[in-house]
Image (tube, rainbow, N blue to C red; front, side):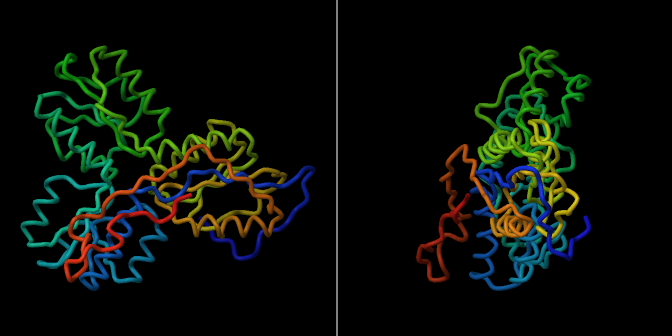
Length: 341
């Protein structure tokens, strides 16, 4: 996407310009935990610390951590033997854990606990010889990690349409699980169509789509119905950010776009616009949203109204290797928990 160099212009519109700022938005507890894990690993062990894949799907976060000494790699065989490696928030398969161990790597697992929950469900259902229909996007790191827990029992279902063609060995022993960052509505439609074909399809013991993904979708649904334009801050490889654009359009926004940075907003998007909805994906630091609000203010959108649909106060303990400092004393940042909007 081209980066705009000149300020946005304050063009006249018939009505009152305003911003509807969705809340909750931005960092979730799992992302917060993962980013702090890399920061603390650098503090505790010194640079470089290696990270398999992007720690979270946000280019700004990755660039910031690279500046502090993190080195991002695609696979653990790129990490020098004996070095520290952090597994990303999206999780890894047992094969990756084994490969890291074989190289003598000192692994720190920053997998979101909600993803770990899905992994455990996959192991349990595979042990009971269920066929697992994993709803998610083939090739996504989270899906690869979950499927890797039980590769002989998992079939990936990419979309509602695929639900109409999936074949199973035993329709009486089928369960569905899902990637945590999907559209709630699309996932439920996929489940509905699967259940039409397999009436004995079992549900997971608890909801797999994470609370933060659901909360951000609920908030943007409320904003979208009153918005001429919705701007979602988030990276192209962030599944939950891309879903927010789709949800905004589905629930009434006249237009919706995703940007990594404020200077990607195009002047043409604001033509005739009175109300702009703004939100961000679960891996986006709020500083990027504030930059969008500043740019929009320069274009006359100075009235900002927060639309809050939920409160979030969940925190996760850091990986065990990072809960104490070098002397063994409990670190005061043993919990993730920066302020979240």
